Amino acid sequence: IESLARRLFVISDSTCLTGKGNTVENPKIAEAVACYTKKYFLSVEMCSIGGAKMEQILNQLIALIHLAGGDPTKFEDFVIIVFSPNDSVNENWDAATEFTAEQKHYAEAIRDLVKDLPFCAIMCPGNDEVWKTPNFLLHARHIVDILRQSGKTVYAGVPLYTTLKKKEK
Image (tube, rainbow, N blue to C red):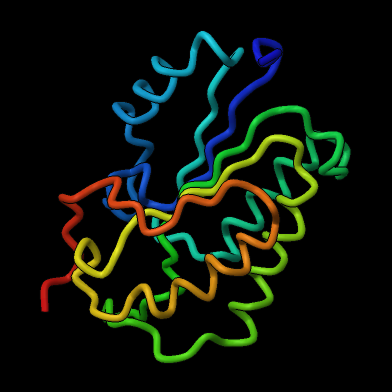
C-alpha cells in the first residue's frame, strides 16, 4: 500500500467518544488509532460529533471532500466512517418505528459520495443488546442496506463496545 503520503480521516458520532455524547474527543481512542496506523499513514485526524445523525455525518464528509476541490474521485486520503445509526432511535432511546423519506435521502447521499471515494470504509457498530433497544437493528438495517450499495466495505452490527450505557428501560 502506498499510503505513507496519505492521511487517515475518521468521521464518527459518539462511538469514538465511547458513547459520552457531546464531549470532547476521547484522546485514548485517537491515540490508539494513531498508534496502530502510524506505519501506514502520514497522520490521523478524527472528527467525532456526539449524537450525530446521518445529516451531520454527511456534512462532515462534504467538508472533507472540499479538500480535494469538491471532487470525491480526487480525494486521495483514506476515510473511515464510524457511526451507530442514531437515526434509528428516538429521543427516548426507543427504536424508530418508520424509515422516513428524510432518512433515506441522507443514507443515499452518503452512499453516493462514498462510492466515488477511492479509499473508504464504513463501520456501523452496535446491536439491539448493546443499545438496550429492542428492534434497533430492524430500523438500522435500512440505512446499512443503502450504504452497502456504495460498493465499499461496510461492517455492520459489530459490537465494538460493550460498555455503552444508553438509557436503561
